[in-house]
Length: 164
Image 1 (cartoon, rainbow, N blue to C red):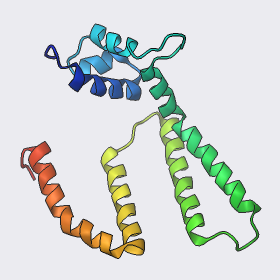
Image 2 (cartoon, rainbow, N blue to C red; image 1 turned 30 degrees about the horizontal axis):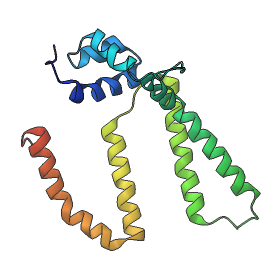
Image 3 (cartoon, rainbow, N blue to C red; image 1 turned 90 degrees about the horizontal axis):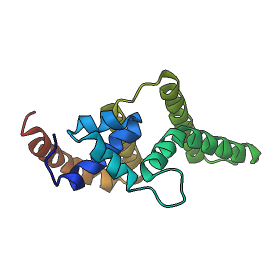
Image 4 (tube, helix red, strand yellow; image 1 turned 90 degrees about the vertical axis):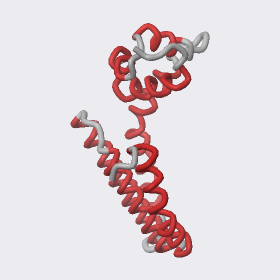
């Protein structure tokens, strides 16, 4: 069971787990919190006159994220299609391609009901940042490269207890 007074530390963790799973009991159990405490924390976020509390609103936003990305892609594709042939810049086409790939990933996740590999997504984003810096800000890339090892060492010390 969680220590008394650990609400400030545990509530955001339980909330995030609830947003991901939709199961309050499981979310509370994952962090050693009673289901009643989690229910109380969740209930405190409901505003008078509203049907959903903030936890459920966040859960709805998360579940609609893929749909929102698909709508954005459709809007941007329509805009690009309405332009004259050759009038769409390469960068715009590249961004549309990336957005399309994200929509496909979200649809795959929705259809299989599985989660996603957070480490893989982090590395993909890091690779994108590096590619962007290489093309648009070579000095920024040098700064990232110079600081990257120090950041990784700090991470290992803080979160992994120095393990490599």
